[in-house]
Length: 199
Image 1 (cartoon, rainbow, N blue to C red):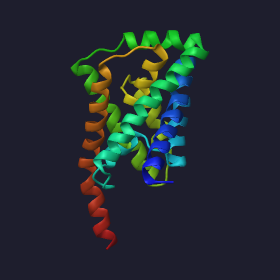
Image 2 (spheres, rainbow, N blue to C red; image 1 turned 45 degrees about the vertical axis):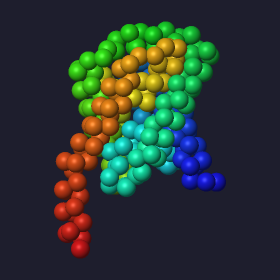
Image 3 (cartoon, one colour; image 1 turned 30 degrees about the vertical axis):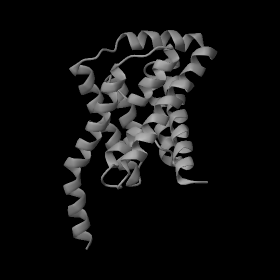
């Protein structure tokens, strides 16, 4: 299997896992839905799948090729939307929940900030997982959902379930990206000091 095919397959896999979590969120609502949603990111991390929001903060640290990150994003978006459509066809209840959720979104600075904050939490959750603990995921994912922060891949899945499109997805993508890189930037000095101590 070529690296590009593997990249695409793992990006589809990540979209599917997050779609399961998002389906649970739309179906069950608070307070159970946000907790179950965490299973999606746990699956992504444990199975080594490619999720844009889990990768973008490590763009420089892992020396990820920009083209590869773009491919991951595009596949996550397309596959996520299609999985959302599948859920909307099979379950009218989640379709109604998705319509209501999308109606609350707007193209605003507040929405961007919510996406930025989600990006910071995603970076922390994945960074903690890489250090050997899933606690960042278990607590971080419900946290950003309860706070109303915006996750671009979850949002595109919701748009698929609602069978619609909203330009706020652009803000969600940029906000998640910037928020993740911000957390990487302010934490990289700590990591570098730790490496020096080990030497």
